[in-house]
Image (tube, rainbow over all chains, first blue to last red):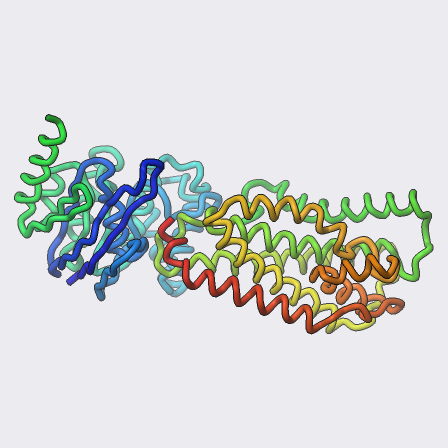
Amino acid sequence: MITLENVTKYFPTKKGRRYILKEMSCTIPSGVNIGILGRNGAGKSTLMRMLGHIEFPNSGRIYSEYTFSWPLGLGGGFVGKMTGRANVKFVCRLYGRSALEIEEIIAYVKDFSELGDYFEMPIETYSSGMKGRLSFGLSLAFDFDYMLIDETLSVGDARFKKKSKEALMKKIENCHVLLVSHDMGTLRDICDAGIVLNEGKMYYFSEINDAIAEYEKINKKGQS
Amino acid sequence: MRFSVSRSGLFWTFFEPFMQVMVMVLIKVLLFGGNNTLFDFSVFLALNFTAYNMFKNILTKSMGSFKANKGLFVYKQVKPIDTIIARTLVELFLTGVIILFFLLIGLFFHYDMAVQNLPLVTLGFLWLALFGLALGIFMAVGNTFYPSLGRTLNIIMTFIMFGSAVFYTLEMLPQNIQAILLYNPLVHFMEMIHGNYFLTLSDSFVDYDYMVLWTLSLLYLGLFLYRHLEERIISL
């Protein structure tokens, strides 16, 4: 169970505060895969990061006793001047892996991410897709209660997409995901429940299809 | 990760302090003539610049540390202050290597490098590093919310070297100027280091209580602010 208590989160802009959440209280039940939906800029990624305790609300509290992965997205989480291999090693050490385990993880990530020679080159030479592949491959080597995924499943060519989806499906037999995506197909495939974020409020739906319907309603309202 | 960009980074790490010392020795010899101090002026400058550069690098590297390592805060294990501590340790290590480099040059050219009190000189370096770390934490937090603070400090830092007993000893100055400069904590650190290094100098100007006061107050203030603003720094 993830509990939000009077959570307010905003970003200061020149035109005043832009609220992502405004005094929201809510409980998210455990044991489900959750998709986060919302229009561009509604704060989906921010909400995901807050649930994963790597960003903090301006007021209020978020509790849970789960372990969360780092957000798997297209950027961030790597030291640009170090090679892919060195970065993998760095993360392994953060999670307290032994030298032997690190060797195994490096071999696995190198194989999975299909980076070839780039694995030995600095991250700053990578394209965003390559970073996403490395980040995703690396996350598969660790066990979390929740994986935070930010649009990463759309990385790579069709074959790699299929491979990563298969790997993720296998992974989520033992863990759960918080997924930010604009792709309704992916959301339906992976998620059981959904959160729709709109104008400072979040709505929890225990059925992903209800969440998608609500999201589409909001989208239509925005267009008209 | 100071060297991984290019190999020239490694070269400049050694060459820059070396050039600083060479240029200052040259200026001094041209203005005041050679061999009129009670100690070897080249060794004096090498010692002081190494110490001062260490302090300056710890401070400036700390200030930019939160922004530069923002990407790493996605790992819950990495706290912003870790990046400052890591950078300070790297600078300490580099300072050690630079000291070795100067020692080798000194041995090769038979400079008189006799040390009066090695433990106190070492303590001086480590204490100065701690002082830099304390000021660094304070400035890093301040700089995050008020970027003009960092810019101001950068300007001050270029001037403060002249008032920090880096290329002279306090003894050489008139008394009224001594009194003013002694408010600058850096003067005490530099005097502690070269006063305890050279057989012909002493640390009689150094007020160790004053140094403790500065270090502890800055460390307290920096850590206090950091503790209260840590979540906001991560969320930036």
